[in-house]
Length: 406
Image (cartoon, rainbow, N blue to C red; front, top):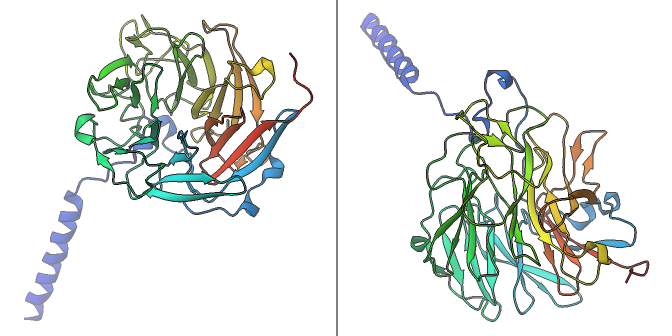
């Protein structure tokens, strides 16, 4: 009997082992896709977000720098993962997030600012847009509308998901939303991979009527845009785009693109930056008929929000220039970005000049970072608000002197 029992135990163990061996290996995380044998031993990985509140006393404001004549202040805290910001007609600010799954409402009563959670437990609800007091929130798998939310904070969400044909993949499918001058809602759908032949519904920018009807694809070959804005004079759409990973420390660089008309192709996955042919996804004449960027924004910089400055507070040379947030690299040995830059260019995309504006988040000596600026909102008085996803903070940058040039 003991021999039979031992035999049964051995057979059982063998069966368990065989079953384990038969199980397919777990798929690698999405960010590893496309790394290839050259980088198989790389220790690079995405930077972990901080989804807990950071006390104001722990935010190193003294290390942050803006140009002479500008004033930087910590304007609001306690909103982990803060990303895109929109302001309603009555002054309330709505803030999307990614990792923490929340949308915040921020109220400023003049003396202090308080926040509350509008909606929680969504899948990466980074996309927020507003028309008047009607708030639109887009997550990976959901589109919600909150009617007259500034006057009625407890208003129930209207689920509009079935009207927007949202594809299901998560990778690069978190959103930035904005209403254009044509009153249509513009929505990007990033590539569901680092580098691949994307399915038909990805790697594009769409626009919709506010009710979800009239969908048009207005741009293709867009890997992952996380910010766009319209030129104040021409009305043309300009947008940032992330370059692919695992081609080395120095590229392909992130892009600043201009779209003078609908229907253009911006190259992904075959052609990157100013004409780099992809080594993994190949196509004859890969860069033929591709619209090249007006500027390169740095290797793995994670360019995010872009905002044309139309206010009167800043000196005249800033008028109609762009402010662009660079959240900062992960797929690079020596970190890059972690700042906000000012970009000046002619309306046709020429004579581009990129200069630092808000710096100090990156410690180049220790190759470490404190915060990650993501989006920019222009206030009625002309000051800029800048969100920090890592620290859950919002900074205000105003101009205080010397006297502005006429």
